[in-house]
Length: 471
Image 1: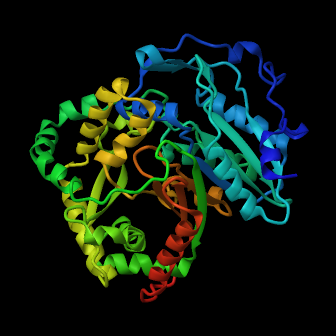
Image 2: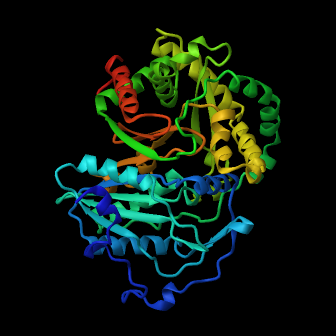
Image 3: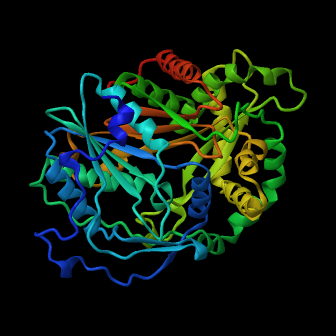
């Protein structure tokens, strides 16, 4: 059976929906309650607008080193969603607000046989889920689960409508499910994931200096944007996403980390420079342009650290982005480019200039009602010309907060789709001192062959670095 047939077929017998009245949980314990409304934060509103153009569904995957028991998995998912208060999502789009009203979990779980090519099936499933919409409704189901059965182990995929959660929160949720399956005897503490949104307004009002510095630096950012080469799209209105996954082994990961320390840059700066060098041949035409000769990339940044402590465990995303750009002349060394990137990124982060991205999104939000669907797709490629975005997440750091024994044997990767902002997104996930790279790309801007060459170029750059210390 083809993958498209598997993904569109009716659920397998082991993946039926959870009954409304599980016998082990009385109705009184799961009755819906009148929860207070929370307002969507600024980035969530933009995600909902983007979702109107094309699905915006990240995918997280954990490999669980035990045989799949579909019934037990379904029960564990229901227990996890109910205990964290993530059931009965009501959305009031007219007032930009939502609430979780409780009640029994309606578990959307599918089971796929692994077969002879599990990595290929996993990649095709991620790609399919990128392009498969969640249906907007007054009561939405923003989570889907897929289990790929390998016999003695299985991959558990969590697909989610991005406006409901940030990637760090999903790591905690999916890790809890994996540990419940792999080590049911482990007595884990309650998982706290507040469903109320972390807002931007209080943060900005509490730090007026950040806003002032950002406004004063805005002309420089605008001038820099006017030097960036735009990505050519075959059909900018086509939001179809494709996916390619690459794994960096421990030796390559150690070499990258050692080089970053030796050169005084962050790992994100170094990977940004690697990606910029790999992309440069695809934008070779910029070298003859009279003005737009720079190649620009975006870094997606988690602003939870800027939040008050009681909001740092919130489930919803709280994001910003910033741009770095460079002419990337032919023959430039990786160290020189990484240090040039570091000079830009450190200044931006030190002065909180990533707030510029909020101003840009605010402008697009004001114009959004007056733009046609084609103009909405074209707005960011024209005014925020970046070739790719990079988002990094250190799962090892998140797992260090729990017992190491509970997560031993698990593996993790994630894939983040493109939106109108970036035609290519590189999701970097560090787990067990190795890097997992997930390339999501718009097929209207990049061919699969181009992205495969891009990934190969990044691996070659890692191979050219001096060997790092043995992990």
